[in-house]
Image (spheres, rainbow, N blue to C red):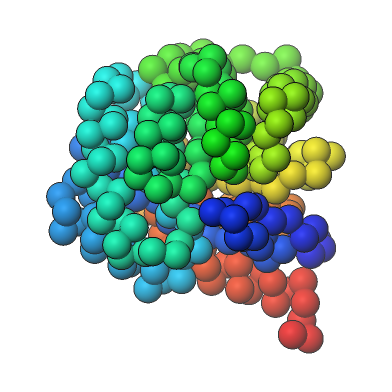
Length: 284
C-alpha cells in the first residue's frame, strides 16, 4: 500500500487534485434506483441531499437520471433530460464550487448537461458502447470522462455474465477504449472496473483481488461498491444493512490505490479515506 500518484483532473479550467482519494456522493433524481434512500425527486429532497453530501465531507457529486440497476426499465432521452433540467440548477446553487458528474451513457444528454447546465464530468456506465457519439462528444467538450466496464446493458447485464479470464478481458477492454479516446484528443480519463455490472459475485471479487493491475494504465481509478448485491448477498443481509460491508470493500479498494469512492454514505467513506491515509502516512 502506497500513496497515490499526483493525478489531477481539469475541472472548469482548474486542477482537481486526486493525490489523496476523493469521495463522490450519489444523488439519484430517479424514482427507481435500487437503494431507496438515494432517491431525490423533489426540489426539497435534492437540496437536502446536496447539503448532506457537503456536510459529511463529500468532494464531488454524481447525478443519475437513469437507473442503471439490473433489470431497470428503459427511460427515454427526453425524460432523462427533463429530470436533469429540474435538478442541476438546484445542485449548482447549493454547491457552486463542487465538481458535478453526470451518470449517463447518452451523448446528447452529456452535451446538454455540460453546455447548458454546467456539469463538469461525464460518468458513462457503457464506455461508449450504447452511444457511438459519446467519445467524440466528450473529447470535443474537453471534460473529464469516467470510463466504466460493463458486459451487456442495464436490462441484460445480469442474465448470464461470462468471462474466460475476467482480468484479461477487462484489461483489453480498457486498453482499446483508452486508445480510442486518446486518438480523439481526450485528456482526462478515469477508469471504473464496473463492480456489479455484468458480473457475478465471484467475478466482482476476482476483479477486486487483482485491481492493482489497472495501475498499468497510469490513470485514476474510481470504484462503486455502495450497498450492492456483491455485498448483501455474500453477507446474507439487505442493501439497507450493507453499510459495514461497503466500508470494508471501500477500505480494501483504497489500499489498492483507488482515487475516487462513489458512495451513498459519504461520512463513512470519508472516514475510511482519513484512516487509510493515516495508515499510509502515520507521521502526518
